Image (cartoon, rainbow, N blue to C red; front, side):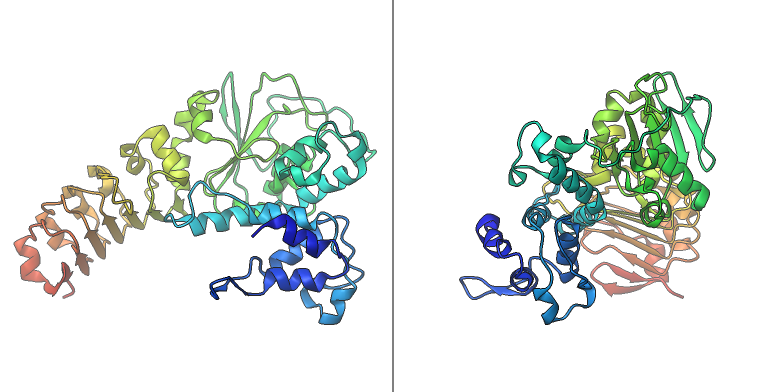
Length: 439
């Protein structure tokens, strides 16, 4: 799809919203006659149209509008640009690569989450275009470049007084968890109003930073993130370039490990590996347990399907693969690791300390191990053990047959495993490496 010819031809006639609607939210047919999915959902288009500050809704309810309403609505002059930004979003993975669709969905969700910020930037662009230094053609700017162009302009005339800076003060709803000569780390884990107030304070009420968690008047984004794990605000206590409202250093960061988001004050994703091996090397060991916990779902479920992308790839780059299991929370109940890249012969060392996960009821290790420690027999609640596609795996501990809760053993695709006699005597061979161990 060539955005400029198609979208410009549509949006130049701003009154014809129905053309825009039909072109982007309805299925199409390519030159080969193959049906193509719509480029946007109706909800996505509605959000992008409303995000343009020059759009005129004329009392039209986008969620419940009729065909007659299309003629009333005037799509704004920045809608074309907004649609292009959304449809050209990129991810670390390439199309067709395992996990691409999920990663793209997360990127799109984050873009929609931050739309209100883009709206503010477009308002500034519209008002101060004549004063902007550099490129003034919106179609030649990305969303980040737009922010850089307008960030020094202020739509309000309000002024603030400089708050007295008290380096030892910690806002209610938060706690100081690291205080070193180079970095101070504030943890916010309170899920209620007090925690939200702390998030607003350390984000400067969305005036000193662009973090959605610090937006006053709405709990939506704060609640979304805090339910999965704490927020960490990091800044240099020696930095004398402070903001006027909070007295905190202007340059600060917010980390949220469960969502794999590590943002600077402008809410731009930072390379965590570069930070923790560079300027924040003091914090590398401090964040290791929280990083490992952030790889899980609620501290109870670990699912890994790639060792090179996303949060897992960052953890391995920082700490190595062997360190992962040792830093996972003891509350773990499900343990799934799959190596779907057959080009990489990755072997994980499952340490003896896997026996410390007393609540573990399921283990799946797919194409990633060559041995299983005897300590797996300490997992009294283990019900399902799947050791599939592990061609280098030769044996499993005999004591597995004594696990009181074990129901199934799956050795599919692991042809070299010598099944213990106790398993053969106790269980039923279901074929294909499957063993039913129910009494």
